[in-house]
Image 1: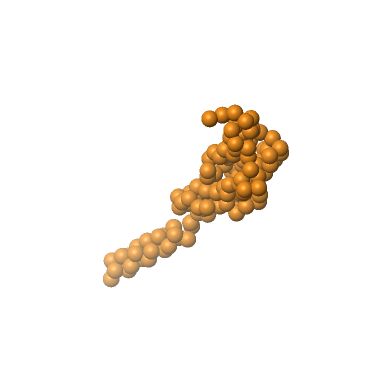
Image 2: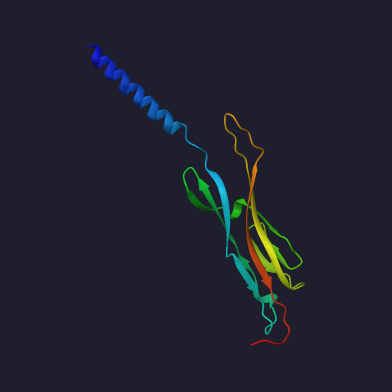
Length: 144
């Protein structure tokens, strides 16, 4: 009889242990951001940039997570910033538009500040950023 109780006790301990493992799941953690497209060029040396024809591009921010490993579209959860807004602006939804006031290259970034804490460690947040290159070519009247 004691063998049955020992076996039953062992089985119950195993069941509770397995249940505690599934309940101890981790929060998904964002580890990187990629921006699509990674580069975009507006205009050419031989053709003037026509700002009236909708010279803009919608960007997408893709977040890579762990626990479980998955990639998600986080376009509307990032903060979009152009490092040269006189050249290319970016909306809060990731729509980039050349201004026509400057030529050259600029970096567009998508940033998220994450907040992770555990029983032993508390964090004010990790900054995760992805970038893309936007280029505006000035019309010179020459070119192929």
